[in-house]
Length: 67
Image (cartoon, rainbow, N blue to C red; front, side, top):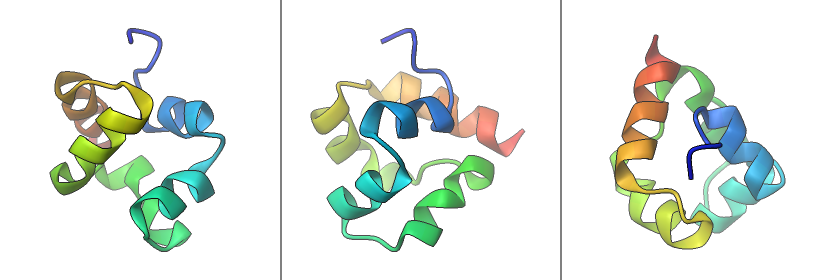
């Protein structure tokens, strides 16, 4: 899934951060902060299963978000 490189790319694939928040049973504000803080590893498995994004991509995405 090379087209997915940023947290924003993941949100676009999912149809918005609200959909990601709903999938993970989280507050949308929490998920929106991932643009700066990265995606917590505890959510990678579910995101990978739902959207087909591998762990390496999620790691790289999170590193980019943190700057």
